[in-house]
Image 1: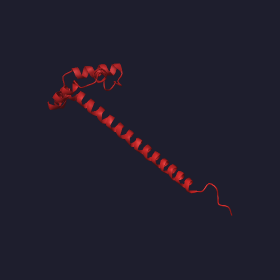
Image 2 (image 1 turned 60 degrees about the vertical axis):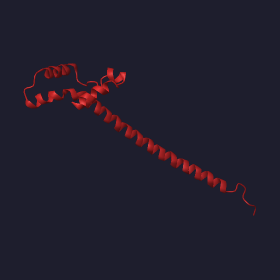
Image 3 (image 1 turned 60 degrees about the horizontal axis):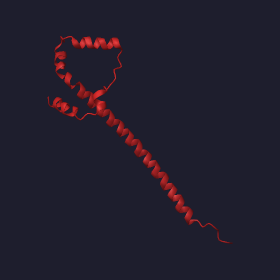
Image 4 (image 1 turned 90 degrees about the horizontal axis):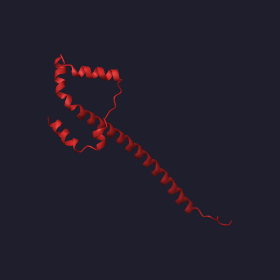
Length: 113
């Protein structure tokens, strides 16, 4: 009940895109979607299926939760890639600066013999 209450509170903070667009487009064919709707409309016979009907309201919560986790993982990977690129660029900069310092130490005109 607490999660559902929090979900209702968070609904007000959703962007227009989140309110209008579904989180996941269905990959089912039309006839498969009709079968799913028919099965969901029928009353369940098994005890576990009846118990699961109590948690149907959490479906959007789990969709949002999973979406947030996927975005978190994508951001972690992007951050790791940027950190790697940053290390590479720092190494290149150090090599460049070492080369520039070395070239300043070498005299331009060699001393006469």
